[in-house]
Image (cartoon, rainbow, N blue to C red):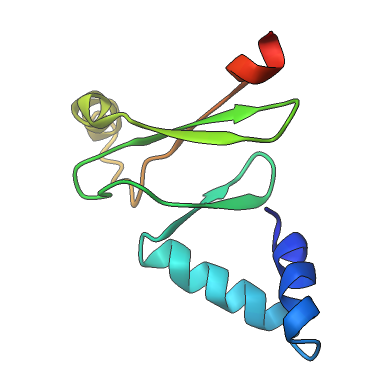
Length: 106
């Protein structure tokens, strides 16, 4: 869901809630590892992985918008080796893959 979709849902029960409240909450949830921000579609999904030992791979269906999270922990060493070549230190790793889920392919 986008931040504004979340805001619309929350306003059904809390009409006075404002966009900054939603953005601050989503930022905190993302920083604490409880949510992922899907950069390519500016949306958020709950996190189901351990950030210290995993690379979340998010498969995003371009038709229905469903997102599946996969464990890419076996890629962490490869990513670190790539960035170590230039002394780059990543704060987080997230891989987004766009395509079509099994329900939309059928």
